[in-house]
Length: 422
Image (cartoon, rainbow, N blue to C red; front, side, top):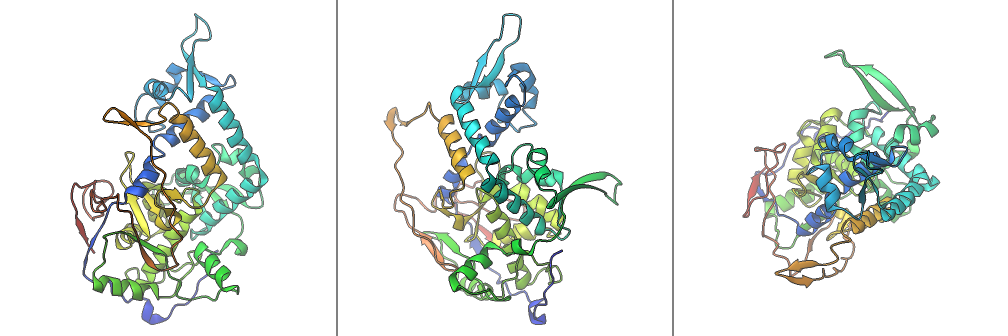
């Protein structure tokens, strides 16, 4: 189980966040990073569904009802038409209905993807990621329906229970618990025993590596913060952030629910949990509804949402591709993911194949190739930096986080600059 550690009493209940209005600015580069994966998850889900058949093909009529199940933006037949480089329709015989299979190029990518999932380094990596996710919970277990929301982002294979977990009986077990409120049985994935060697957050790992010594508990580790060019915090807000950064860092693998929920120290622990959650994901981002669902289950209530609102230099919420996506900003330099995970490399190859028929875009009828962007140097830990690019209109189309409206309290994309009350 998670460990408890006492924090000085003066930090338990103090809440000093200033009464200020923080402008939430849209980040065009992170929007690109999110929009780049448009339809990727849905395409891969359909791919796996087709390959689950012994014949590696399925009747088109059997795939049509799966639109809502896979959250497809359009009908399956239209999707197949849009991606002829992935899917190939054919008719086995005149007496059989139209079928769909993968193209030769898509099958080649699938085999390479399967080789990654079968490789011992990846299997060990994804097992450790999964164990660390379970260790973020108080009971070191999660309902399977919540875990499935993070399956794609964790890099788990589709049939991870039989394909992966069955080979690690000393790590995991499937158990069933009854909900006392409604009496319904729910399946959980449970970590059999706490693993001290994994109870080290990414923040602690970096600090320990830079110092070359074992990290002491309670040090004021500072989160990396990036703000877009033209974004300036009010002086009183900046002073509060500096003071907040100097508070003791509490590991997300410790149980600190004894802290006053509205205290600055509790908020720094909440940010630590959210930061570690996003770092465990191969793309360092996930849908907002996944984050809030997990936050509710863990007992954070709306504290995850408040953390996203208070710290736009640490987290970004994109409204692209028909959903809201929470992004860990430090993991990206402009629209480039800095950590090169093998599975992300495969996904980018799928994206390239999806866009194969569109090698260049047409603007006003003239072919225009996309220009390459230079990668920024790494941000210093805990230092607020600004991204500078003269070709970007930084304050155009700002994103708003607010406590009202649709989409779980997050605003839609406004047409002009807006601010939020904290």
